[in-house]
Length: 400
Image 1 (spheres, helix red, strand yellow):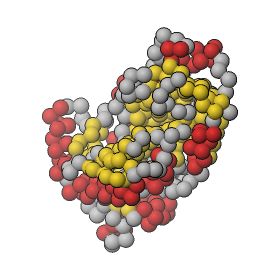
Image 2 (spheres, rainbow, N blue to C red):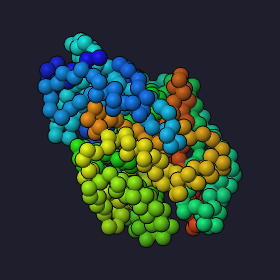
Image 3 (cartoon, helix red, strand yellow):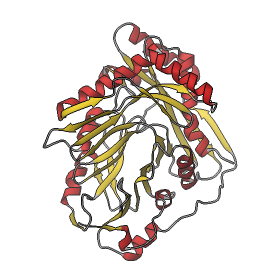
Image 4 (cartoon, rainbow, N blue to C red):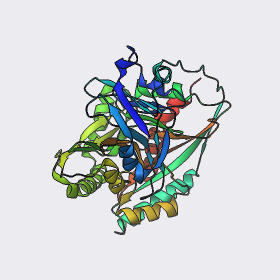
């Protein structure tokens, strides 16, 4: 199979908005205007075969350091099966400002121009919405209590307990409009749309760029009110919280220890900082290093890390067993990883959170939110945290 990569200027002087390229039926992964959008499906490949498939393509390129890519979602369950998508046409905006296009198969100029043309969102059609819980609140509170008891007994250090809600509309949800709203409110998050999973994740699981490796785990959450002074006080309380610091430390230690065997060096911030998004704020710690050469491709690191203690718990196997026993629903792709990999093994993967899984007819969406449970966790406070986290997607979907 053939692949061709050229500067976007070879086809058009327009530099389109990636949200408009993806529109409601394409593929998107973007943060701060850097990322990619794709149209069509040239191939679907098993997750663990993606890099081999991409390297098998007959690639004709006039652009340095850009190779064909695939994008998709790695599920929550360790080693879970899934497929990545190789789009027919991918438009990429690179960190250095370049815009490039990769086409799989024979190059069709009209196909490329059609991919980059602007698409206006469809006018809103859904007028009536209903929201229901996927599990009873009492069931969720009991699950949190079970996790807290497991931590207090010494069987676990941390477990993440989540709950789903279901949104139903009287007409299909306009994905293009949702993506535009997410861009307006969550431009610094990793915004994505892949095979019916849409969202805006603030958390970088892992990024590989040549020998460089980066991660930015988040754990520990406080709400935002919109008032500067109140939010500052809430942030100070978050940093001072023993419960949240313990929750955060568990995640950082595991991510560091997982990446270290592949790294020639790995550094991290000595203290967490506050990471803010529109509706909540988190404790975050950046890790950066260099991979030993020859290094792993990014998917090897995703598989090793996913799910981190920020979404599963620690020890991982014991936490996942408890989650499966007490949560009362199947997580599926929630809590896994979403991102892309190229033929060189480079890529960027975010934690698959703050997301909605759409039904085939797009008249329904499942949202999931959770929180890390440690010895000092309060079930009612955890319930409030999930309510705050749901607002990211609810405010983008449910609009008049």
